[in-house]
Amino acid sequence: MKIAHFTQDITPPLGHPLCAGWYPAATAVSERLSAHGVIIEPEDGTSPMVLCALDWAELSNFEHRRWCEAIAGAVGTTPERVAVHCLHNHDAPWPDEEAQALLDEQGRPEVIMQTAWCRDIRAAVARAAGRAAERLEPVDRLRFGRARVSELACNRRPIGADGKVVGVRWTRCLDAEIRALPEGTIDPWLQTVSFWQGTRKLAALHYYAIHPTSYDGTGIVTTDFAGIARDRLIAEEGVPHVYFTGCGGNITAGKYNDGVADNRALFAGKIFDAMREAERQAGDSPVPELEWRTAPVRLPGREDVTDEQLMTAIRAAREHPKQASRAALELTYRHRVETPITVSALHFGKGAALLHLPGEAFIEYQLFAQELLHDTWMGVAAYGDLGPGYICLERSFAEGGYEPRDAFCAPESEHALKQAIRDVLTP
Image 1: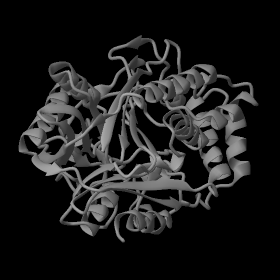
Image 2 (image 1 turned 180 degrees about the horizontal axis):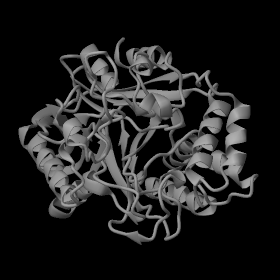
Image 3 (image 1 turned 30 degrees about the vertical axis):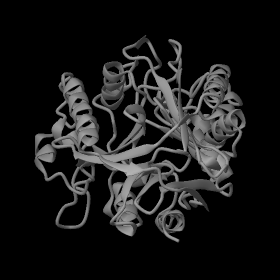
């Protein structure tokens, strides 16, 4: 196999909406945002595969598809062999051109995105990928490792004796009683795969499931703690590192985050140490046969809301950008729901795999995938096409809590997504 890395600055200009207008627009920049990706060319001559991570909050619906198409065209592959994911740092862009167009029709420009700038950035990232495709380098061994991250992740949805959510552990949790509850269901392992040519490391990919946000809504653009850790490692080693956020839809740092600003540096240190430790613990593997599998999935929209209700909400929310944005994003998802989302997996022989999922998928989907291939090293990236929003479990809607109220897809989405995961992971 051969590999090449590409990167491109994707920092928004001051004044650009952050998190689709759910938070104040950009007034300053703490850390510059980047797109990082790798192009992998199999030895058998099949089309290249691209794995790309954006330091953005989200990228949804047809906008996500356009990114896959642009990168695919630049490197000479198909959109189904391109996986684009977001870090999900909150104080960052969340483009969705169709959703913004719905707001434009109501005289609400630049609530979600500055369309021209976002188009230019998409083209710039595609050009960077195209240049990288011309300098692919041979890989002669891989290293797969993992490291436990302690006292960082917790489940956002602590469940009481009655089977209901007793409180929400947000990105930062100021309620000491809720913080004191057990961590709940998480995946404590950070997974790492690195690509080598002799003694030279060409690139490394890292996977960990958590909302990578320590505090937000400041108007200050930031990569937050996961991006800070990645950039520190790149600076120290001079080697490309790409960080992917796993199934963190119901996972935050809330148990360990009481809102103190210094926690951002503390959490960045935990991720940095885990990435270093995962590489130290990694074992060598010869380059195996590569296989890319895909499965289309349709996650149905909610039945408790109609297009007409969402349009009414868009028209009524003139003084509330978040409400207008949310309604436009959900309506856009309902308009594209019959257009399938691609779930994909890259298999390294029978001993390792990378799984690419849409939405803010719950951690249970990651654990489900790992159980399917229980003796296989696996990196899981969620936050691909964010059109469906939170992908909860069917039981989550009876349990209550924030995510089921905010999800754009219906309870039966659990069955559909799990079937797609089976399709790409098992023969």
